[in-house]
Length: 178
Image (tube, rainbow, N blue to C red; front, side, top):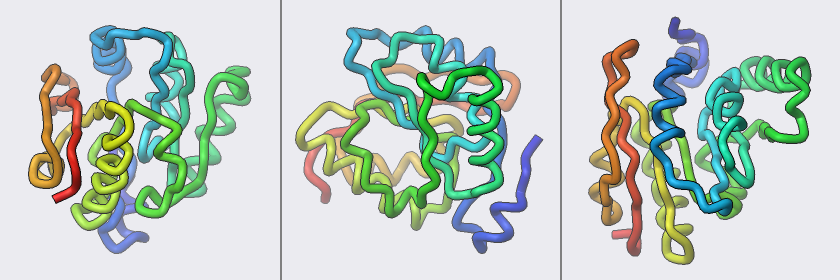
């Protein structure tokens, strides 16, 4: 179910909350190759389902950012109940202003915000990619062209989510910003 209250309160900059199917998340994370250095950031983590599922995989670090205080509070409470506070971190942050992207090398997005915000986030990911490889997991890739216009995109996998009728692209992005 999609919660559109954030869409309304942000004047369309944020797309609201919608949960990714857990079965699809397991398919995504099972398709990754791990060497122990993977650090995942869920950009627009909502209530934390991506983080909960990711914590079952050998990520070195699992974290999420969320602009909506209410959704973040639900995520933090969920992790407290599940006794996962030591495994998962959550930060209240505006994705366009977040300063910690360099601490991560895998980024999950489920179409969390407008093209205006996405352009800023892609710029930040490209800055990181100049120093380290960056992998993006983009579920419902509405603004894929922004990645393709700003950097070199190498698609690693495309997965299909039958529940949502969306594709998920797993790709590397590199190169100087254009």
